[in-house]
Length: 474
Figure 1 (cartoon, helix red, strand yellow):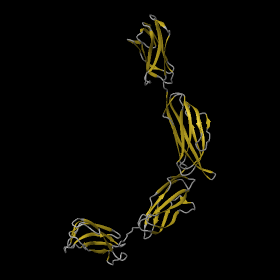
Figure 2 (tube, rainbow, N blue to C red):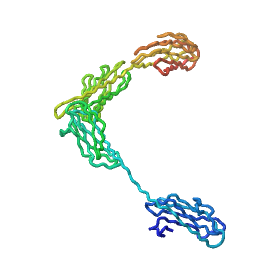
Figure 3 (cartoon, rainbow, N blue to C red):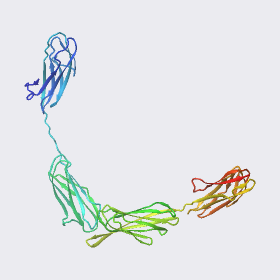
Figure 4 (cartoon, rainbow, N blue to C red):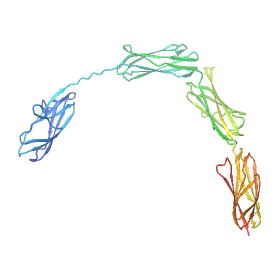
């Protein structure tokens, strides 16, 4: 039922009872009471639902629980029922006698009307952006952002920036002035201006944004250094290398300024202790370099702002020691046909060239096959075929049981330990050095045998092994 008019369209609250038509005597049964706020903008408070409990009818339990009032009347309470909100009451009841029992439901409530007032704050913010460094030939782009950082709309916002001496807008004015207009809360507008410098130097200023009711904000100070084009250069290559092995180098020229680097060029003086093997053209314009003795020159043409160009070359180091390649990048800035400024950047790459040894171990018998009882000779040689020296070079021979040591001669003395012959180590073997030993052994038993020689040194991380087969005849 809708209260108070009985019509849902004109009433405030609706109470609906959902219950079975019949129930068994003496057994619990469940029914529900649904309470709905029919209004769109009215909150109901202290809602009380009262149900009569006639004779032979009792409420056993409910969710929520029944409450007792000061007048002894039991009811269900709803503290607050918002517009359109519904609440459900679940009831467990029992009828004691057969027949029809009528139980009436009433509702009481207090309508509550709430009013809201929104308080707003007026705030404004202005930021100024300017390049840190520009080419004197090109305009300086100034970017202003005016933002309404408050919660109230702003009307008639204006922007102003008094430029420092030596700086002016492209039309000759020395003040940036703009009617920003209206800004809703959180909205922002960007104003862009272009200035030119009359001379090189440092230029600083602040922008001011003004709104209604003396509202004002000031930006941070920006400083722009006006100078020639700003070049950067990097040369990348290995820190170490090996003599007679190729080395690759990459040279990248950057334009870190805000204007094109015109007539850019990179020149590389390679170390005289290397031989240039190959050169590769610029990545963008494919210009081949000019080669004059140990100097490589690339014409890079124009490098756009925040862009770069790459050239590469390969060299063959001829000897050990440090090699150094010097790279210089240059550009010419022009206004019209007149060259007004230039820029230069330098870099160097150093590579330590090492000479590594390369030991060759050889061992072979002088007579094969050989009769038992006769003496066999093995020639053992170690040759340093590399470009660097090696140290503590040692050869150790292992004889099979069919051979017996007789004598050993050569570059270093031998020490015999059973079937093992250790030659004293060579302290240093320079490139192209050769060491040789003659090992005399006696054949004491027939068979196909293997004589093994191992080589170790300071440079070798793993011993080298050489095995020589020999057939011993009875």
